[in-house]
Image (cartoon, rainbow, N blue to C red; front, side, top):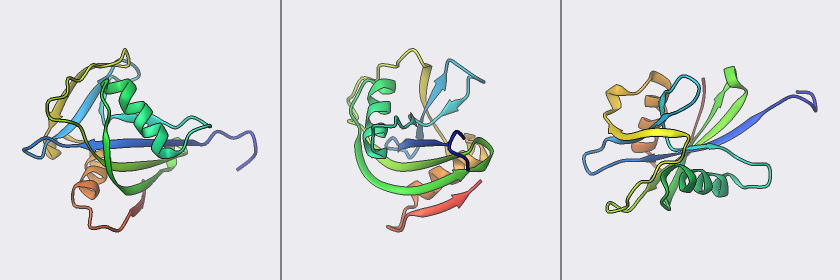
Length: 134
């Protein structure tokens, strides 16, 4: 990799409700896809700082981080993404940023194959961080 190449680092939160459904946000940009809260890490942040900032911006609430469960290389977009098991207060009022138009809890079967793999790794986390390449 050359000095001027672009390489991305991101972090996302897996937040579930009492029935095990996963919180997803609907983007107002790109392909308007549903995705996990989180995003790109700024150069002056740790991965954990970036995750908390992104979730605070996107959800309008603070998250509680339980564990780093996986680190994934997404070769097509030249990025490493860290996935964390997180919680929000059940009574919290989610206030979306301009980046998202909706939020909802989804069943695992509704997720794309890659998203589902990352979420399942998180939900069934055994204490050993998982590393995968997509």
